Length: 228
Image (cartoon, rainbow, N blue to C red; front, side, top):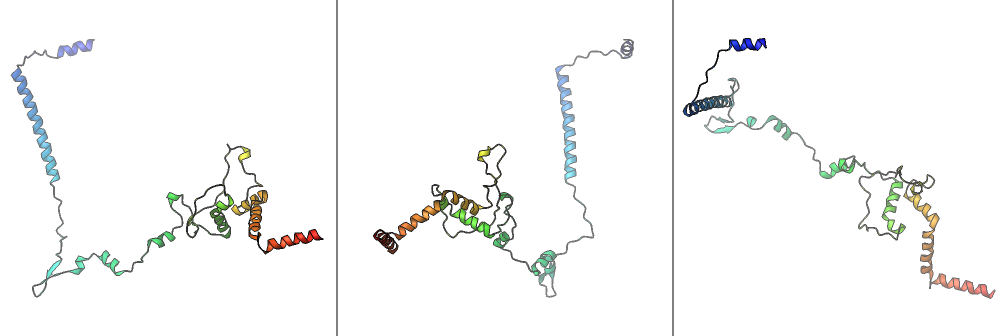
């Protein structure tokens, strides 16, 4: 409280000055003029900085491409017209590479196809691919899309094993003794169980031999057995 009283004692009293409307308007105009003057000075300084031209060294000069000859005819200097790098590229031999050859050199199918490696066509894989194309014969009750034209192996492929998840029940999993190495072994194991191909083969042979020599010979053999 003592400090505040000392400061108030040292500050001289200020008189209240009443300004008219004209004086207030004049003060506002003067302040606006000062602001405009500072803005123009900043703009002039920016224009001067933007119009600065870099200094060129006197030693570096541009030589003209055209030179007058002795007969008064202007000729072009070929050494200055063509860049040295472009001249070297024109004189060198470039190996032409087609799109097909570039595709053949690719080791994988790319990141869009999960970097599948090139197909290594082993005898086992070839048999598996043949069985996949003949899947309509293996499972006649299911409809598959027909493949037209000559069958070709895929350019990029990979063989994997399906592993059951921990949430699947034991009855839906394949036991180790039933798991086979490839499709051919699975097909043979399935045939041993249902004998479907064997019965199908017998039906085909029966239709082929009916009404022919084999059918007549079988009929004669039955008759001779009855006579004996």
